Image 1 (cartoon, rainbow, N blue to C red):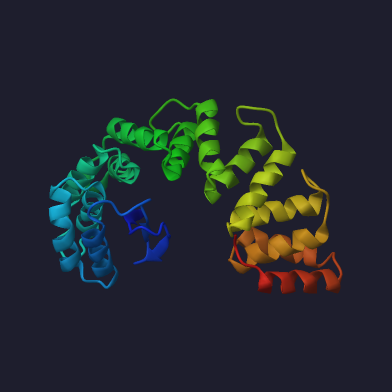
Image 2: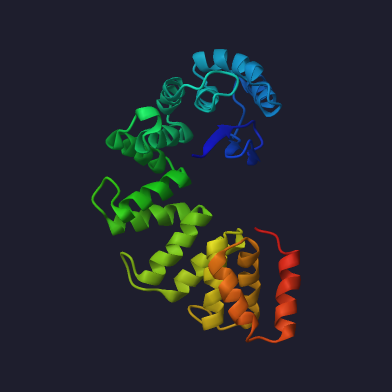
Length: 274
């Protein structure tokens, strides 16, 4: 399960400790120095100091510190892991409408963490985070409605929430919007829109979307047929280990000239996700 941690004032997303991410707030607030000192300690792996810096801030009502203490207890960083204590701190931050805290509370109840499995409560937290604009909450909520997981399936609601997340740039949501437009879920089939959504996710490096847009260029579905573009995107997806893309890449490579193949390899070598 992915956990996210507030950073300092830069707004940069930093990946560390496997599935733990750092997100920066818009500003440091009144406690910026102590908060960021705690964050720096956390990055160094000095979890005891981070907890020492954040605890008085959290007790004074600083939502980001409350949220981060929840991460520390959830992951057992320098303390005995305690899902109960993690949820306690997240509840305090959630009471201040911190979307990330609402999202973590939602996942802790939706997926039965530590024996706590309350779908109704989890769904309520998730909806609250989604309404506050947290794109991953919007995406998860959309998927829940799409597949009817614990709720009555609602394709219109599913499309609405997934599209909100996709519009905010979430690659998985963009990929799913491609499938929604392709299949005409809660709307008309729109091959051009499907290709556009797949391309948006592909440009971010999402392998499934790269495979899909590659095949659309190969077939001319929603875009003008272009074997060069098809080979390029299939090459990127295949390099990420996407097994269907590997098959599609091999099949198309046998049909195109060596120049097209070599150009796709060169472009893939130089490409970086946007």
